[in-house]
Image (cartoon, rainbow, N blue to C red; front, side, top):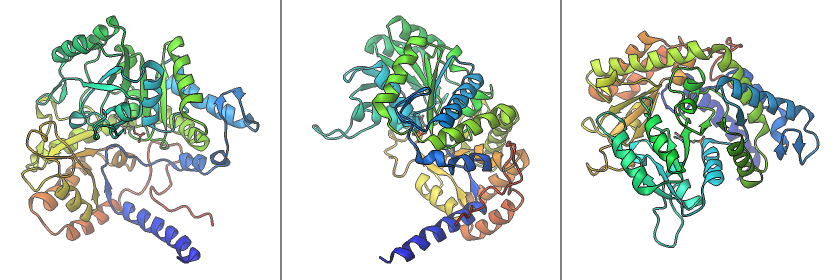
Length: 439
Ligand SMILES: *Cc1c(COP(=O)(O)O)cnc(C)c1O
């Protein structure tokens, strides 16, 4: 391969990607778009450096400014989540979870979490490969935990408290992981945590998806509802760089988390992302409440509009959603795989998703019965409730009327011309997917 051609090709593909997203409706619930201030921090020299260890106790020189930035990131984190301790070194949500597994469990211990079919994340998954292999989710395959499941009420789309308490008493887990990748409503933590604590378990809430909403005070408040620690990704509703963090109020438990992170799990910890996280946290502190309110209003409006257009939207009894997410059953229309591909052709970016009853119906993650939508990114682009109705009409044309998705894509691109800028940031004049050229 000609190196200069490959080199040029990378950049032309990057530019094409930017142009595509610029004319699409981004509805992936785990994604967001960062401000230019966050991107500037990501491009900084911090991304070339090492700072092993803790602020003020590094095992590398050259950390004079890095330490001050990391301290700012921790201080903002503690302020926003109203908590005593924060470790901002985990480089992703999975690493944050692994830090908690490492700090509070031994291989062979029992952990309880939701199964992946009901919102659990792969990082909470058991070993499931052939005997003698170590294939599976992080909890089972990497840390050797035995995973037992939190009971779920499919109808309510939430944790079943009574059945879960019985399971906690039966399995006596060392760790319970609350939180989920599919999360429409706050989870009932308090009663289960009380029983778990009485049996000596550590209780963690995985806020990967909802950290931005929690930080803004607009979802639940796990640390005041019985969770001992909270792990998160910093790039889903929290509109920061791809990174992770752990917070806790417990002094002794925090020491264990710190040790798990370093020297346990991290050598470099992506210092440019730590700087970018500090910027994103400052933006969240300044604009988070109106941003989170609009995300939730948009999610409710999108769910209602899709329902009105004839879609099967989950959670109807409880007003569809109280988070950034909307879950839609599309099994009758053509299935999750077909819906995802068709919408992509129509410039609407979503992901197919397992529904709680899919396995029982003989469906798998390859072609599940649902799609999951999230309103974080479209909210950052300035969309409001009326725009959600417009989006629902695009869905109907592509998935119910089975109109040519290419035709829908043209109208989607035109619609997107009204939403070019990033909102809820100090610097909002910049175009969301504009390509930054430094060469
Ligand atoms: C997204 C997610 C994570 C971690 O994701 P990273 O990509 O590693 O940041 C962890 N837990 C849940 C519930 C998630 O949805």
